[in-house]
Length: 170
Image (cartoon, rainbow, N blue to C red; front, side, top):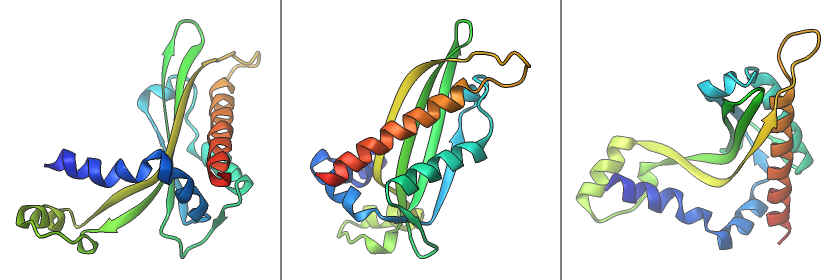
């Protein structure tokens, strides 16, 4: 039952026909959150603040404004797998998320109502886009972290928000 409920609530709003409408409605956000997988840290990607700044720049470039009154959060998830000599597969995913209260869902099925009441509230993804790419991680001659992974995420964010703007214009 949980899988069906999650499918109905999270996948159906993301159908391609509705994606354009959602992008037109998304104009403000409350905050950004960055999540990094354990593996991506092995690709010399550790600084969430730098990635949050990249995300905020892309949001501003797409016409977004930050507002305390918004119920929309923007999540950036970055995972990756190092391989070979100085190579990393980087997976970048952006989600616009809001919280839905169980009280806002009407059902005549007692078991569903009980499950919803136990949950209380949960995240609903309004729009999501992700991509992955292979990136080389050249080591700086002076030592320290490679900037290759950061540059890779920045490029992927740019492409994700190009797609967002494209959907918004349709």
